[in-house]
Length: 455
Ligand SMILES: NC(=O)c1ccc[n+]([C@@H]2O[C@H](COP(=O)([O-])OP(=O)(O)OC[C@H]3O[C@@H](n4cnc5c(N)ncnc54)[C@H](OP(=O)(O)O)[C@@H]3O)[C@@H](O)[C@H]2O)c1
Image 1 (cartoon, helix red, strand yellow):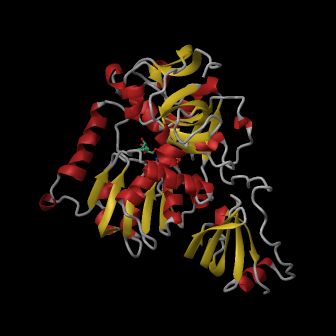
Image 2 (tube, rainbow, N blue to C red; image 1 turned 120 degrees about the vertical axis):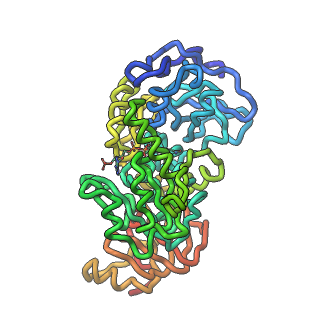
């Protein structure tokens, strides 16, 4: 710690207001020097923005927000001092500081150094860049908490992700697919390819007709088990009309409608929303479906599971755009446009491998010396279609873009290379790390498939 500078650069939230008024870039912000038990010091490589950042800036008074303090919550970085925790100096990590925690510890992600609890961090898989990793935690934990912890999503169920191209939505699609669900997702037409790349089975363009009308006329069979509203609509119609398309024992989850401002019309919308979702009893015409508004609360076991899903390629962290540290206000403009697909990231440390070329959909495979290649694909002289037909029912090796291999009997595959295997073994570095009866592999994670027995 002795070679650390005394001060650092940080974007400080100094006052209430929109980012252009609330934020100041300071170079005299003190580098945290004392670490309490269980906390570590992180050199931040990249930070990601979330809507809660600018919403709190605009709405929360200074005393309640603990200002001044560095902005934002999600980050990726390098451990400078592990302070006797599971981390040691040099570990590459990602994680986040919640809004509540930020207020108490007066730390934020848009700073060069951050002191934070070790249990809010996990190791960054090497094939994921700091910019990709920076934006994972808050939205992935939100999607996971909604679908898995609250919604108790099971394989074979059908879910609707409203806002499939939002950051929460993109992770929700991937998590739901990884758990074996059928996923419907909404976005405007321009984002259909993105939403399908995330794994959505069905796409609905919400701009063509009011979503609740469309779904009431075209309900899925069976009806949805979970609707996750990742847009956080203030209009309660998607919920109040849901008996037409949400199963009787299903649940409607909202990530928390907030007004755009404190104008009377926005406040009226909030009041209507609260009445329809919480207050109106069913005997007075209230909606006969379960409704839950939730605010994500960090859970270490959940973050560990998310980290595994990122490591084995089941989750690919989508990045919308990357901004230089000096361009934070431009990053906020993009955030407030509500048009991003994936995370908006700010480079905090230009000397890290932050300069690495970004690819928001396909993580580069890990270095070859770490993961031996599987047996070379067999020579096949027919067409690719013949090959794919020929391997159904045979033992195959499916190599993921993350470098992990799945070996098993191919029970089926579709035109998107979504693959179902039986008697599945997961191989990492040439050794068996897991055995599953059946496994489902999403096509956009597949690098190639080869036959493991003669065709
Ligand atoms: N409760 C919690 O703990 C929690 C945690 C995280 C986030 N949130 C909240 O969840 C919401 C989403 O956050 P985020 O970071 O994921 O947002 P985001 O990435 O900024 O969302 C942008 C995306 O939303 C889509 N979108 C906008 N309006 C839409 C509509 N009416 N229908 C369908 N898609 C629409 C846009 O797609 P198009 O361009 O195609 O319209 C765009 O791709 C925010 O309100 C945020 O505050 C809550």
